[in-house]
Length: 211
Image 1 (tube, helix red, strand yellow):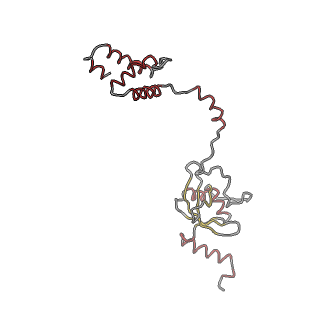
Image 2: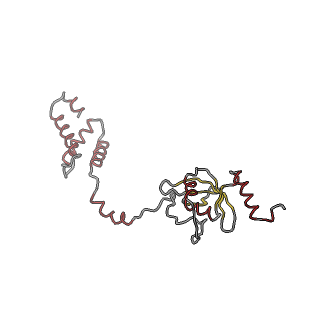
Image 3: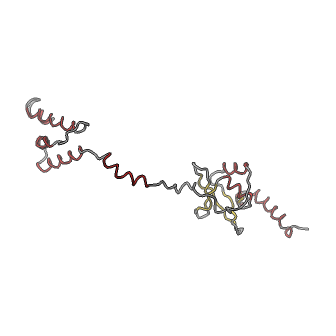
């Protein structure tokens, strides 16, 4: 349009034709767009691109690109066939938030357990990086470091020294494990607890007590 205005001193049929092409292009962006698109304006579009300095081949490519850009996008017509597929999809729980796990493997599912709220609150306020000692069914002790707390369920994930997942439990389940002597503070990081636990172990084993 600018080229036509410059060539015709701001008036004349070339400028009117260029303005008509511009109006036709804008009309294709409205709900009242023409079903035939810009077919009737194809020759005028080629001429406009030629005036802009494009060769015949480049002008044809420019027209094709313009038609593709103005083509309507399929909406409701294509959404219906996809509906059954979308309905069949089910959301899987995020692997980072293991809320679906019923009970930590460190705890026997059939055990009769108790816990106190104070202990549960202690675990609820546990800081990231805190280490605990987990005791398995055979009495083996393995250290686990708190590496993540679910913002949704509040469950705590502990990892072993290699970074592998060791235990995922709620504060209440951890309190139950304490009651079952399956969980305790990590001895290497708590000297007082280590000393006290040594005294308790000695009381439990009279053979180690001096006469």
